[in-house]
Length: 468
Image (cartoon, rainbow, N blue to C red; front, side):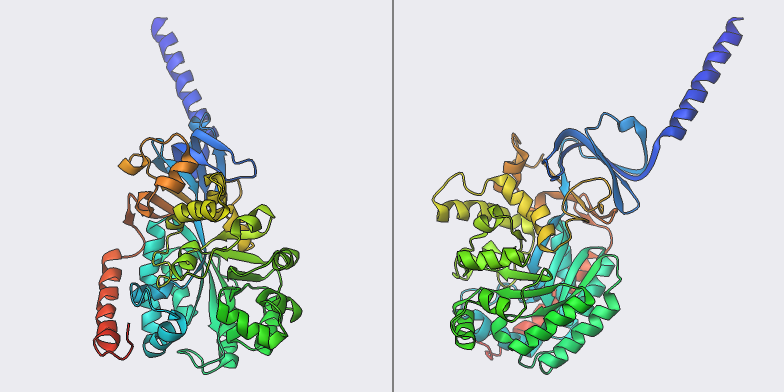
């Protein structure tokens, strides 16, 4: 009798275990024991939460009490580390990594140094090599999506596809001859061909990228605006960035500001993402808001070039679509958005003479949901919410510079380094785990970049053709 009872109990337990197993939600990836910063509308934080991923989307974000209800192919134990949305870099020129640290303090650097440098050295190979290096830097710094402006963007697209990132890639259009186009008309055609090739890619959004209002004609800007609406793609542009731009546009438009001029010619649309936006008045800001324009705030590059501090805090508080960017690796030098956090918080306090200005939670929002809104991608990325694309990073809280963490937002903004990013996940796929790149050969990419640097030295530095 005892043996029969024991057998019955064992069978019942087995059946319950089997039923429990069948009832468990099957997911591809489970991140548990995490300090989860969801960056949802309520800024929900879970101290011991979990994030479940199925296919390429977030299946669940919870407080972790339902951990037993999931059965995962892969599990990451965050062990208290910060789990948050992947960072979004709203403006860069990724391929220029191969020119980093050149002529950093040259006055009028863009026209005196960078344009001549690019004329000599930009090629398909250079773009590919530089993009591969920059992609690795960004993945290792927690950037899962970036917006790029450069030449041969189809080459950048190939590198993005290979590493597994998400990107908005803008083909540059400018009025003078460049490596991939003899004039603006050819640049537009190059961009159209690129857009048609990548329009339906799941992780790559092709775009037009007129360099700036003052380096393109009114007709070119109007043509691009019309085509962007026709193809329903973004337009990325440097806007309200420099004194030269102000002067040229004022002469062209009868004294209008660059923003007023863009509105006058019909080039301010929701498809537009303006980078820098430093020299703007209150009325300019009203125009940007009225036309639902996205804005990329690049603090490091702006202050390094001594161009000024954008009224980004005012624009953020006024409800404009504004996110953080780094600018190119010749401008801010690093292209991991996390490196912007500290300066964004502190410089806005300084210029506003208010220690309470730009608190850490606003900085993190500008790096995630704010940046997603700037790119009009807030329905897909920028927060950890059910149904959104699974772009997630895990930030180490055990590193000496991160101990202790009383406030995760403050720790990220005032203490964290890009190197504190431990795991990077894009579209549900782990691209970096425990600081190791999984989809590309980091050593081979670095070695190819170093080899190209030798060419740069011989062509530019040692020859003395372009003086630093």
